[in-house]
Amino acid sequence: MMRLSQLFKLDYGRKLFLLATLPLIFAVAAISIVVTNQSKRLAETEIYALETQLIEAKKAELHNYVTLAKNAFFSIYGGAAPDDEEAKLRVTQILAAMIYGDEGFYFVYDYDGNNIVSPRQTNLINQNWSGQVDSNGVPITDELIRIARSGAGYHSYIWAKPSTGEPAEMMAYVTGMQNWRWALGTGVFIDDVLLTVANTRTEVETRIARTFVQIAIITFLALFLVFISGYFITVRERRLADARQKALTARIVNTQEEERGRVARELHDSISQILVGVSYALDLARRRFRNGDDHAGETLDKGIGSLAGAIQEVRRISRNLRPSMLDDLGLGPSVKTLIDEFSQRTGTQSRFETVVFRNRLDNDSKIALYRVAQEAFTNIERHANANLVTVKLKGTRGGALMKIIDDGEGFVMSSSGSSSGLGLRNMQERIEQLGGTLTITSGRRGTKISALVPLSHILSPQSSAKED
Image 1 (spheres, rainbow, N blue to C red):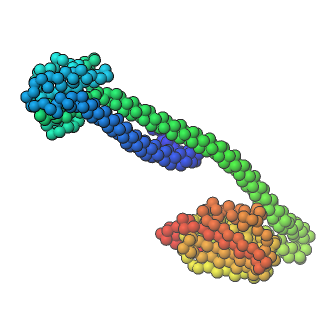
Image 2 (cartoon, helix red, strand yellow):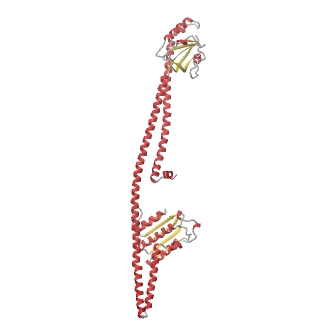
């Protein structure tokens, strides 16, 4: 079961290949079905037209043969009485002598079903053939007599070839000699017509099959091209992904090193110096106590004060790394504290606007928005020379929205609408990882940063009871 599930588990490349090939396969299959049906329908129409044309040619030929025979004995039949046996004999002799081709002959039946003339099959003469049917049950003699009684017409049936004795389909044309109550006719075998039609149908089916094979070959080539294109695209995307991953890894490493360097500088420049001062103060207080100096207590108080400052500095550094207030009180109070410290440190006026709502942001969203605010204040402090900074934090229909606006000096944006600075890229990536959007607009009148975290990162009311 595990192997089967792994077999049907599709990666991005296979999904892309299926997405490209399945519509193509369905389209080609539909086109093949339509083309095949249309070709068969058109072929049947052409075959039917060909068959009709050949049959009509045979009918015209039979009609001419019978007309020719009637002209041969017209002078005898026209002046003879119904019981003129001599005239009948002379006509039968003429008809018996009129044979043509390998199989052609004339036949005569009286209206009672008796065969009078059959030069190629003399065993039929002077016998009554009423009720005769072919191998398919089609009446022969009775139908010929019926047609002759009504005037003239055509009739098709299975008949043995005189030359070989093999049964074949014959088409006969018969006309009535009403004075003598005779049915005169002749017939031709249409197996050549049927063979032509069969050969034509086979040729058409072969052509359709060849067309289908050509469509299949074209489809295979198209699928092969799609596969090759998808393969090269996948290889290219993998290379780009590897390059991006390497760049991202290098950026992460650089960011970590920068953060470590910043923490190290802060520890060295502030904590280390304060602790050195505390050490000197305690050492001086110890010497003064030994010597009985009255100023020893003052020196000790200064050392204790310096130690308290070191504790505050440690708390500040710890809060910058991971503010505990963010977990305890939420995003709003944490950002408010960040703004107050920024104003106290830089002397820049600040304004904080927020709509009180339940602390329903998940941890990732709170950390991301807090880091965006941290990075924004750092950039404002270093580069903007702003007089007023406004922070707006509220919930909207689209999610949680934070805006940071300053009236300081802007910076040049790239053609993609972003800055190439590492800090701004980190802000962008943090928000994009949450599926949100970060918009930065900068100009002569200042800079505006808008960070929107989608609703998918807002918890249900039952999941949170704290207020931002």
